[in-house]
Amino acid sequence: MQQLTDRLFDFIGSSPTAFHGVRSAGKRLEAAGYTRLAEASAWELKKGGKYYTTRNNSSLIAFRLPEEMPAGFMLAATHCDSPTFKIKENAQYADAHYTKLSTEGYGGMIMSTWMDRPLSIAGRVIVSAGTGFETRLVDFGEPCVMIPNLAIHMNRSANDGQKYNPAVDMVPVYSLNEGLSVHERAAELAGVPADRILASDLFLYNTDRGIRWGDYISAPRLDNLECTFACLEGFLAASASASVPVFAVFDNEEVGSLTRQGADSTFLADVMDRIAEQYGADAEKKHQLYAASTMLSCDNAHAVHPNHGDIRDVNHSVYMNEGIVVKYNATQRYATDGISAALFRLVCEEAGVPFQRYANRPDMRGGGTLGNISEAHVSVNTADIGLPQLAMHSAFETAGLKDTEYLIKATGVFFSKAVHTHADGSCELV
Ligand code: ZN
Image (cartoon, rainbow, N blue to C red; front, side):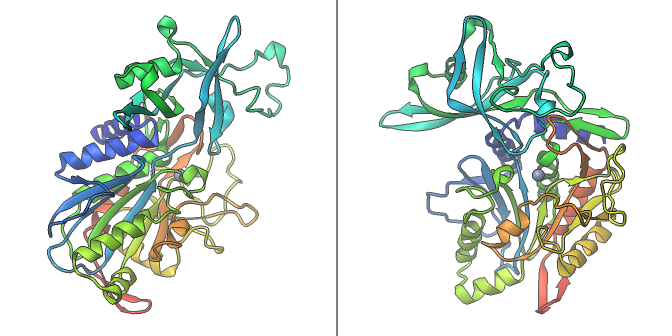
């Protein structure tokens, strides 16, 4: 267990941004024999082959091909972006005493948790190369940013419910040894002179490493790198089946998914089409394949808070270390329904892992995720699942020690299966 938790923390530590998350997943896949494909090149796939492709270097789809025409696709989708602050193009400004960063919020973070903790900078720089450009990932790796609170002596109402104005309260102070600017340091890390940087996408991140404390783990970006890590491990551990197992990790879930590489793009549909066409599937065959496919949309879930036990549906409460969460919502903001829940239940039972059922309190809206967004492009039977955690969208989140392994086991079984559909609503899982 300790070893698995350390590997999860390594994965989180090497994934400060979605770009780095995709690179971490890509490295893990390549170590397991997967070949990277470029979307812009012709694909000549071998039966029995193992592949992955990326879009924008911030979303990734990996798959394995069976020898014969597949029965369908077994998909698990996660996201690898997290709420943070993005550094604006004109990165910094200074007065006589302080250098500050121009930032914008990315996603819905709990602002107070970003204060008074050492932060660093990571992302990508686009550097000129010949008549074009190249992308280089950079990670400052060391603390160089702080968003300081106002002392309580100057803000006596600090503990009476605080409103944070991002243009005033959340402006970060930047300081790096040797006085290097953000772009100078980024250029140094990219191994190019600063004047070769054409543009950048840089973000703040919490440098803390994850910690285990008793039955719990706490770390930055558990939403949703915990699910990403677990699904990837389950994907790699699964045995061969008659289906195409597909592991997809998307960027931009925290800002609505509607980007070229988000879950609300054609990325997944494009990859599934290209795979089906490698087997010579015509339009009729593709319809059959997609109708026999199943997706797990995996994103962390809200465990009952120890101090706010009333903020829950009394009959659908979930707890850390008590199993994978299956999420339900009558208005289908979670894609789970009777069919997908039944299928996932069979998977959990075979894997021997516990699961628990979550629904929002009827007077609370709750959050959305990527399952029903992806459905608009690839309409397959989908269950929304996740791992229970506290303090979602804090800079430092908490989850259960045991749950990561449960999801690895369940996805390991899921990816080893194929669905044979007999009629609408009836199938066999083999
Ligand atoms: Zn999430």
